[in-house]
Length: 347
Ligand code: AMP
Ligand code: TRP
Image (tube, rainbow, N blue to C red; front, side):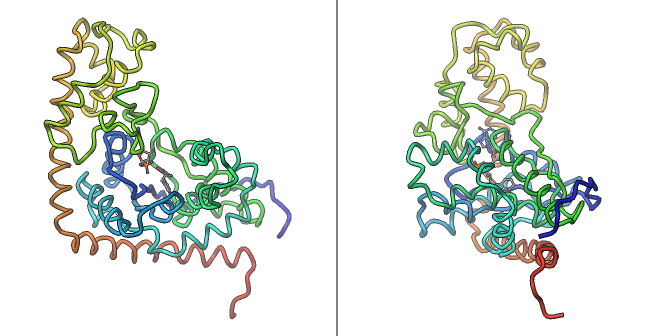
């Protein structure tokens, strides 16, 4: 290895967007607002790659017999949300070997201390760290490889991925310095801000809406029918107070704030605009209005999702073509990385 350089040379390559979603369980309103909806907007302005991260999914117990279909389901959700295969590359992570190869190189750049600080590892490993897989520890390094194999500059994700994105930046920066390759990798920027970055559980305003919450009433799934969505909103936890005139007054009312946030995110307006319309009214009036907006926004997505799922061959075609396009971008990057690291190759 050569001496570290302090020279700051900015990455000057083209802008590119990358994001990934794990093929684990049903997608919900949080995934839709925090991720999918943003992906769809970005495909019009940027080169984009959207990946079903199946390699990440095997870091936790999973069912091998279900994996293929789970991957197709996420691809179907991407397509149903409005991603177009002629505008964005849609593919499965395991079909492009550059991810695992670059992950190994990054394993030798990342530091144990950096990974030990990752809150998601601490949450997932639980109390018994000794029994956690090495894969779950290494998860964020693979995530950095996903992004940097494409020299992606922007990564749309929900708030929960902020720390992982900081690690990706640290790995890119350290690689550039350690191998004296200033500006080789971009320092990828998270795109988190905006409505829907952190949608909370319908049952507890202090917990994020999650695939893994044991209560199905805590989330709106993209597969729920209209009646189920309406029933879940009706049963959502709230308080007896009417909606106030300003968001400041909702600071101690997390459930109410969450519902207002969902309404605003789906309508594409500010939270304040929702209060301007509903202040003084109770949840008896607000919840049916919210249910209507949720159903109106998600019904077309659910419909298209089911239509795609009925055509697994069409999904496979999208994934196969996407895999080839992705490999064509990532393989030359990884070949350059091998040269930078200094490996032998036939001259
Ligand atoms: P995951 O289901 O954990 O693979 O997440 C897929 C994407 O959805 C990631 O970008 C997450 O940050 C985002 N996401 C997951 N849960 C939420 C939530 N409750 N609110 C907003 N975004 C979320
Ligand atoms: N860790 C992300 C999540 O749980 C999924 C992911 C894997 C990802 N690789 C990525 C997101 C690269 C953005 C970019 O949601």
